[in-house]
Image (cartoon, helix red, strand yellow):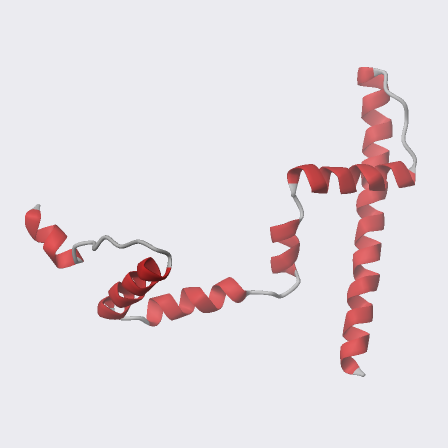
Length: 116
């Protein structure tokens, strides 16, 4: 039951947020663009359509909204990396290179620093 309430709250919050952004877009458009460029005014639904179009063309809302929603998956990887020793990091990088098809070997950090 708690999960259903949580999902419903997200839907309501998303709807309210989109309505606020649509009204802000409509007001800014109607206050500025008709006078500056001589274009027509827009209504609420046209402003919402502009926001969706901008999202599709430029992809602007994704990351900020994802992190605001509490999904901090990147943080777990970051913490894990900082807990690794230098040897574990080297081994991790080598395994990752092999998994992605890199067949060349990089010199270890100590070997690279000795050459300088």
